[in-house]
Image (cartoon, rainbow, N blue to C red; front, side, top):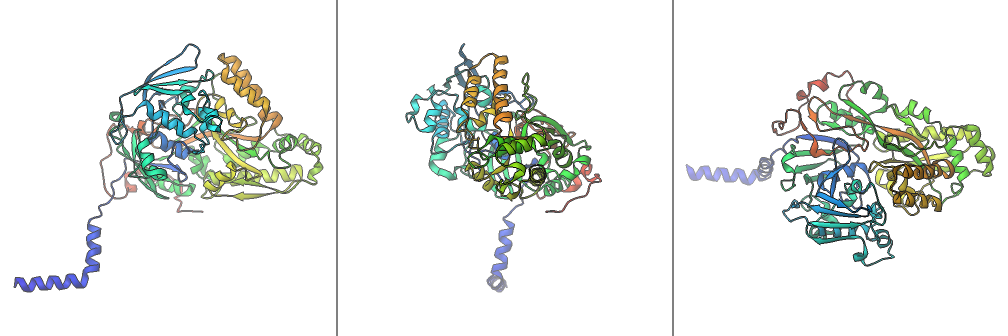
Length: 570
């Protein structure tokens, strides 16, 4: 009987082996555990390499995975101790001596001052092509090394006398240098990891980090999963074990995921359908605040006729910003005629060029194009795939195209590019006019105005002006705050009123969606920086771990909304 049964089982196995193999494989695939927190973060990250990232979605991930000498206070966004537990500043404000903690990389290796020296050298290397390398130009000889004029890095003003001391020498006093040290570009990376894996070092299973989280997985166009880093020096105060970060570009999809309970936080106003903002802003889970963010257009000053300041001023004067924030953005944004947003203590920007159609026509005529005659047809570049903020970009472009046509008699076309292609086009000056935005990296006017110095990595206009460069350098040397503000005001008037390589349009309003009765550790601040490791449930405990997808039944507060649920609308 036993032999007969054995033969029967074997025959069944041989006949059904493909099916059984499939069932066995399924049996070995346990459902992935649910994350403690799910965040909708915007577009798919371009990279996780702090030296070359440029976007806000990447920056949020960077401060979860990496930590610099300083970090951002979750409440105020000001600089607080990070890897450096303390520092000394010389009386002349030019030499910083950082004293590092005894802490580790995620693989257990010790973090030393030499990690910062090597990482800053890599960022400044011309081969790395870091667009944010200029954030280190305040260091002695850093700019010369980046430009290739200097090849001996030992002459750059950063050195490690021992494993736990880093000395940084600046060419001028830099009041915001501690804030810069919290910026992702100045974060260290693990040298052994980079040298072993090359460009693949940022992939899951290879990336070694030193921040509150490690990279558990990265599934393109699906999610990035972060896991608490047990080797982080302050891991005891990180209350989330697993965080999923979703790359969602569609506002309809983002709102769907949030309202059905499949996501806990929407970071960006651009991920909310603008036509619903009037109603959504009334909800208790909608949190609004002002922050240092500007929306503007760049002119390619290397192309005719945009190389003429009169043309640029004419186009700027023809734009009615009030109409844009009233008809399109609808989030409480303020029309902008200058670049630096309000909110920096003590600094007030000089007014730029407002809406003046008659003066706009006069400027265009003076440039040789009366009533737009002879003005070449050109293109406005923007990113608009996926909806959300991208949809707003398209609507703004349509509105400005109409203003320019009706006021100045000129014609243009609209060009929509996917995010990464759009960034490349801007960097390569492959455009006529393009939409742009800037979120302050630190709480000082310099974070906006040093962008446009000659050859700046984020200039992206081709504009160069000797006097402007001199003013920005002078502001960097000035210790008296009142005098610094006057210098910046002169520079900003030159940028936004006289030369106009950019067209300021409006100042952002921060809008986050999350249930304030459930989550704490998310604070409004002028940099719109919300470190993930500071977020926790209000009861202080993790939600019970559960396998499988989230159930919308767990989120009754969201289900009671009278708003419609959007099913992947275009």
